[in-house]
Length: 123
Image (cartoon, helix red, strand yellow):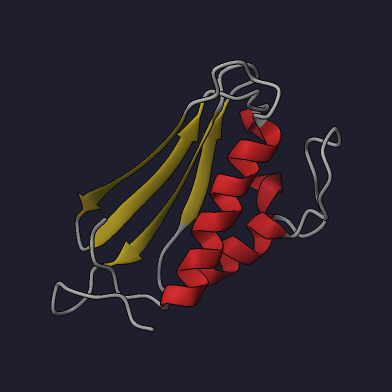
């Protein structure tokens, strides 16, 4: 993974939330696959977690970041995880979004500014 200018604990929360959602919502998907990748995007690093799970209607994609809004009620949760993750990313000068389609999985992405010295995530 690349080195970004970010708080290690908070970024751990973001990654665990997005990965946890992929596992939780994809638990009934035979041969579930989850891919984590990163790439340089100008002065930012772009991180992505994609899966081949059930996905959801992308026209409601922005709603997944609204506190207490849940698109899937078949699994447990409060509807807070992604709203907190987005606030964390926003507070670090990045952005967060999602691409999804019913039956085709979801791809959550977020960006973080590159570390000024090119190395390290702050603790």
